[in-house]
Length: 389
Image (cartoon, rainbow, N blue to C red):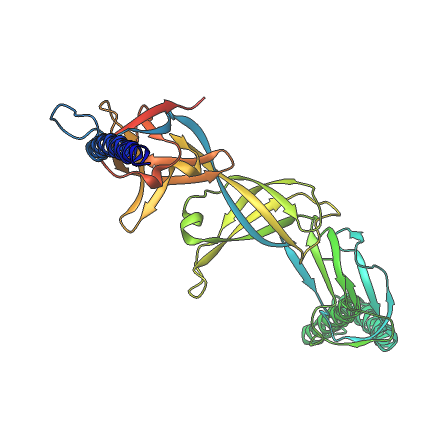
């Protein structure tokens, strides 16, 4: 028993020593692994914070890619857009020229063509007709008296040679004859006056043209104060009265061509400026350009229309709207210099059309102009220009 106990005690002690050795080795290995991990973490942290070393020098920035265009010079037709109304070029108002009276007949209507002197309406002349008949009778009476006076004078001239009538009697008969002849002329002049008055009862066209309006009806009582009964467009000529700002008006000359499109239609009528307003409205600061148009049923006086007027040509660079910038200092573009840096260039723009905006001052046409993205640039920025196709 004692032997077994001794052996067991020794075996247990040996086993404990082996276990203690294994624990020490594990702890050493663990410490070594932890140390290596800490070193790796420190190295990685330094790498991410500092990165690879670069030689000392100025900081490098990536150049922005921009699209540029070389505009050259283009012949640009100057255009001005305006609106206005259609009207008769020479409108003729027609009213009562005589005493007036009751209209008995109207012979034309709006839209009819008339010739010069054509009767438009007839006013009752029954009273004037009686007056004319009465005066015609007075003419006959005066003519009969003149014939009698002439006969008496002829007989007296035959008797004076024989001495039966004195020369004084002949003079008296001559005066009587002259007075009778004068009364004939007065009577005929009065008859002519009555005839002219009666003729003025007819309302006639002063010139050939197109009847635009009619304000006369049978049975209507009219007088010289009745106003306009008919309005005519002389020879049917029309015009557009285009309203323009004074700056645009100054760019036009008489003879400039224009294209007129009435509202409600797609038809285009060619016209020509025949008169420019000599005055400017003080309230609207506008003037009127009168564009002559040939007659067409689609041109209705009083209707609205739009017009495109040609104001000459100019040779200048033409740029799209995206290239033109503006700020509180004015209008400008960005030009890419030989060093590939953006430079601000102040410009003055002109005509604006469907193809772009003309630059009348500030560009020669051979510069590389930033086409887009100019709003993201600053003067002096380095760029990488790409020519637009």
